[in-house]
Length: 362
Image (cartoon, rainbow, N blue to C red):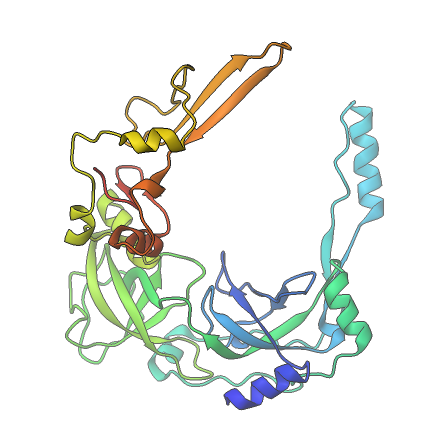
């Protein structure tokens, strides 16, 4: 319950942070403000259904489970001598994470994918991992010592930041080469991104019965029962054939919530009419560089020429390099339709074959 972890947070037994699983689903961390190092989440059970970028509440495991960064002096010394003999400057000391022996962290359970997908049976974590009392010395280490990494587990998801949309390939449990589902057969989604979980796909009207092999689908996670190995989700749409550049681009946009829609009529009508001329009043507000050779370094194929440079020799012999950035604030006024749209899009996205712009073109 929310009141429970809020009380634990006030007592210093729980901490709020951002859940990070950028590379692998089985490797996760939580960034806690004020901690010198991210907290390590050692098993998928301890991530407790959290997705990358979610705001979560965690508790820490016992001090004996924490990792300590140490150096291997004998190895470093040997390598250093060898490099010196070759007249090569040795690098700085390398460090490795060495967990304490017999840490007591719950081992990842052996899971039969097919059985668990069909049953969605909750898997209970090992006991002995309840929230622990932290001493003042423990807190000092967490705040100041970058060589120590605490172990923790997620006890609540405070804010679901991740959109829970997963793009991947459908397959039939027990026969990945099959291109059709039989009656009462279970479907799974293998995500394209390695940091996302397999999804148990509901066999409803949105899920194809055949012809799914070699195609990408978007699935929305609808339910993830506490303790279950996999979430359940529904197919939203077929994105197209895998490895096709348009399909893969669309898949990236769907996975990461990139707005591909056209700009609204309100945005378009608020653009300046062409040909555009600079009002005389603007010359009075700005410094005039037209007497200098100001040039762009964008290639001839560039569609956005929004920055430029100038370079000139000064009287003292030094060179002045000027950087000129386009001022869109003249066209994008606060709280206007264009401003609202740009704030939602946050940036332009550059793909191999196209660009999804943050601002509409004139």
